[in-house]
Length: 90
Image (cartoon, rainbow, N blue to C red; front, side, top):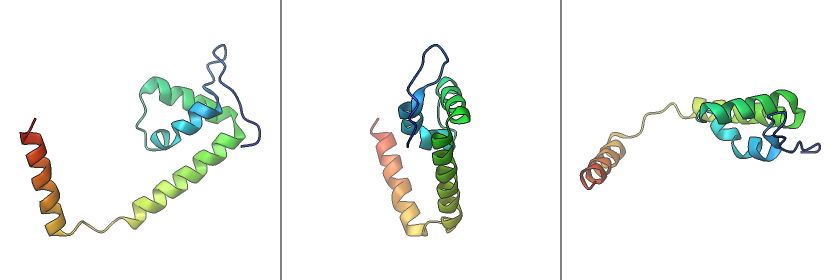
């Protein structure tokens, strides 16, 4: 990034560092509402972070499209068995 924007409590801007740290979760809609709002507001005003968001969305979508094959049945069985064991151990 060239024009890094620092966090500013007065404007509510979380800054480039926090936006970049939370970008993947932001793109996947996995942030709590407060963090999501902060990152969204930052991206709306920061061209560099907005570009990073676009790239992240493109990569996320490309991976999603590439991973359409279901897992092999034997792999699914092993994973489900291990999850059951782990859950039973709690």
